[in-house]
Structures are given as C-alpha cells and as structure tokens.
Length: 99
Image (tube, rainbow, N blue to C red; front, top):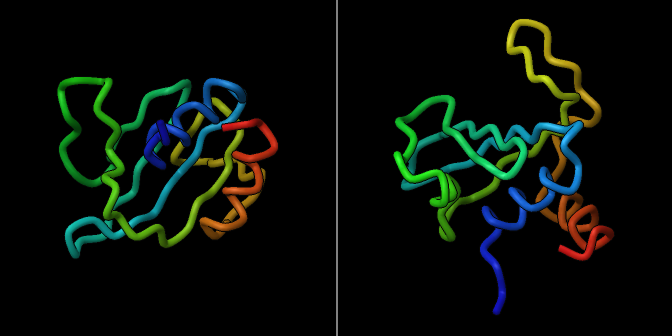
C-alpha cells in the first residue's frame, strides 16, 4: 500500500528527529504552513485536527516549498538546514531513507 505524502513526511521526521519540516502548501485554494516533527503534523495557519493520526497535508495539496530546519524549531530564530526545496528534491531524501 502506498502511503500518502503527509504520512511519508511524518515518517521522515521519525527517522530524523533532529529535523523539523516546514511545508508551505496550497490546500483548497488557501496557503497553509505545516510543521512536521517526530511523526506529527500541525498547521501554523489553520486549526489542526484533534486526532494526531490525521496528517494535515491532504492528498490534493499543492506543495509550494519545503524547508528542513534544525530541531527544536524556534519561529523567532529558525535554524535552516535547507530552504525552498521542491517536492522532487524532498522525494530524493524520502527515497534515500526508503520511505
């Protein structure tokens, strides 16, 4: 069974707990920013589902950019590892980890 992109990104942060992913996406025509850390995702601009097993990134989301940041995430002083990754670039990291 193929996992959704949201679940795969959550798996990435489980494999790399020293990183936080910050995903900018267009969801239902609206911009959203989602933080993913240690297997959980949370919207920074919209309400987040009560159930932590529900990824915040729906299948029909359009990925604008993904940033890899050092954990812990501090919005006042983010420590970027890599910024403005495309989905294709992030896919190569996922494939490297077998996700």
